[in-house]
Length: 198
Image 1 (cartoon, one colour):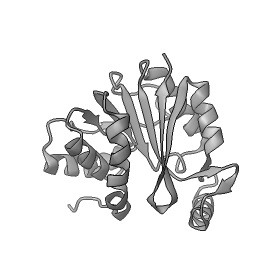
Image 2: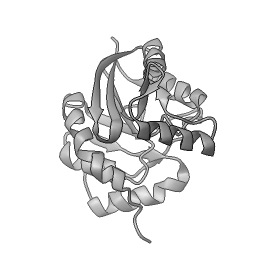
Image 3: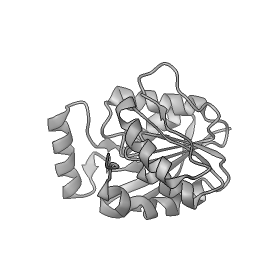
């Protein structure tokens, strides 16, 4: 069976890595939520060998992630675990950092709320959350391509869509997460870093 492949992952992995090098410099154990193909995990685990990088996703995606992990054979990249933001219990309670890419606009808003609540409630003091993806600012898209993408998402599932940065940041703050960095990325995306308050 062919491994799943995302061209977008290949394009954005190095710009994201440039942010993670700083954001996760003093972290030990990262939980990646919504690992997708597994490409990001392999790249980041290879270049950040001080981290245990724990992938997770819904059950149907685990076999594809496992193919990437098995081929990479990295000691700091264990087998993926099942994680659905709607589940009562989450794995990897020992994580001191969380990474998620291109997930907030796929989830419903209640699921975004649940994710931020769970991350804010589980990260230790000083723990770090990094989110990659598109955002609106002041209710306005940062590019026409993002506006078209938003329409496509909402046509497919009215509960999804590009999120307002201010709403996500307010939710993060309400759950004890302080904004540290909001970095522009290629293709009109952002990498946003929050830290858990003491």
